[in-house]
Each structure stands twice: as C-alpha cells, then as structure tokens.
Length: 137
Image (cartoon, rainbow, N blue to C red; front, side, top):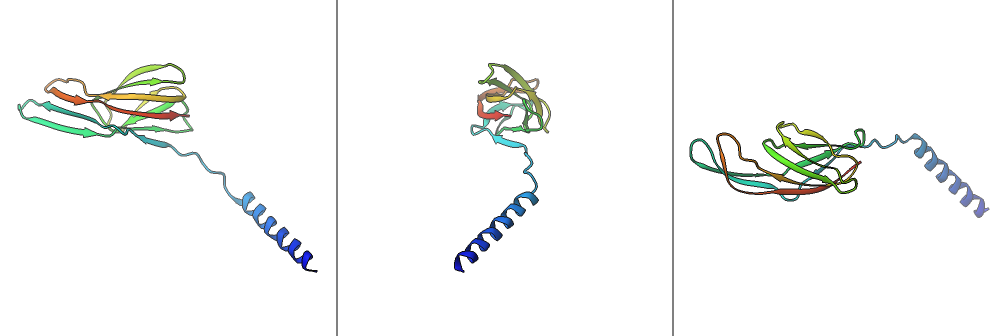
C-alpha cells in the first residue's frame, strides 16, 4: 500500500513539473553590455589655455537579434581601434554620437583599444588608451 502512495506522489510531482515546463515562456535573448575594464583618460589644454582632464569607461553592447554588430558608446570624440580575433577583420570607428555608434565587427571575439585624437581648439598633453574584450554573437 505504501508503495502505491509513493508512486502516486511521484507521478503527481512529475506531472506538475511537466505542466510548469510547458507553461513557461521561452527566455528571450537580451542585449549584453561589456564595460571596458581599462578606461580612456586624457589631459588636454583647451582654447582658454587651462588644462583639463577626464576619463571614461567605454561600453560595447551586443544583441543576439543583430549578430555581427556592436554598439560602442556612450563616449564621443574618441577612436576605437578594434580587431575580431575569430575572423581577422579589423577597423577604426570614430565615436561621434553620445548615444552609441554601431560598428559591424562580425561574430566572434573582439579586442579593442580606445584613443583620444587631437582636435580643433584643444591639444592633448597626455592620454592613456582604454581597452576591452567582448564576444559578438
């Protein structure tokens, strides 16, 4: 008699588990943000002649819905030198949009460095490049 109760209890638990699995919605793939662990930093002199300094962590955002594309940002006025280690593709992206710039890096592991270029009206005295690694679906 006890064996029957054990079997009945096991079948109820298994049936409830199966019902939960079938009722659950599939997990949707969400964009992945990778913050570069090494920030880009610089010291510059503007048109006033006064020095200014700053640093920023760049973010690489990938989305499984757009494979092979990375959105870099939210920093403006920097160059991102990237290379896809998996495919050998490489390029340089100039970030001029504070909301992020989309770059077709291709799928695979991508490495990048971020540099500050000299610009009109200011001069870079010193800078350290930022760097990061991420995987593009």
